Length: 456
Image (cartoon, rainbow, N blue to C red):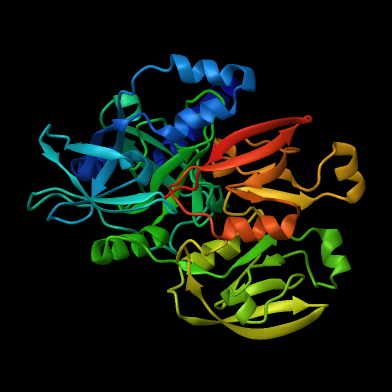
């Protein structure tokens, strides 16, 4: 009996030893890559108005005036994050939200050397920013092959969570191509999801594979407490390559624009639309004058391939369109009334001007709202001559910052009265950016005036 127990114990010890032998040793990887990782500290103007507006927007109206009266003088904002060197002559990559509104940017290396940095260019839609410091012969990190990353692969992050310099955490890739809206409620990044412990301060830092090459730039966490719960998201190098090249050459990023509202395909929808399978992007709306309209794409079409890339989920479409060079003509494969069609579309430029009406992947408009019209009976019961009802408000959008909520009835925007959905769409298509606009709406039969502002 004792011999049997000893045999089982030995087998268990050998199994554990064998498993440990298969685990990666990160020590050499850290020694190799850490010198090119930097800590970033910034000093900005006053505390961002949009954050104050967000707080106010969540307050009951009775407390709003009190907040305005008691709010003290604005103090300079301070942020910290991470980044990494991508060229020996001082180009550094980080997140847009790390340096947004920054007036002073200080970069610190592992050897405690410090440099002042300037912003070469910053792109809010991808949440990436390119910095430059005056230095030579710096250690650098290289991007990995964008197609080489697989779910289940080991990855490692280095950054400064909560200001704790050069902390190292490791985990595996949980998923690829996640559609997670950025802080600006945009959806142009197919995020890498990992279980690597990422916390505030890790933003902008690199995510490595076991070869020491960068597979992503850490950007977001999902958390109920503000700390890591094993759900972190990184911007893939497929996006970073494109953005860095444009920021370095032009200081800004141009991305493709199609001009459609889309939604996913359920099994019942697939059956109703005579589709072979529940996949693709169902077109719910088309912007007038957009590339989609010019290319004869119509509401009800189901796009299953764009530029020779399959569209499995609706979220895939903005990821693909955004990376296409504006002006390029691409092939589109879609189903219309159950019949497969092949078409061509010349991709436009996103954010071309104030006249653009952007429709999000959730169908939201420039203000981040989804709206619906009101029937004559509803208007009569509300004692209103006209208006439109808010049915959804996107997180972080201009509508949310203004304090709008589902069920609010918008009756005025700027100096224009809003009687129906058509008038509303005409007004928001010409709203200027960066300028507060008065908005009047009804909430539970009470008329409310606020201001709403599109981001620059």
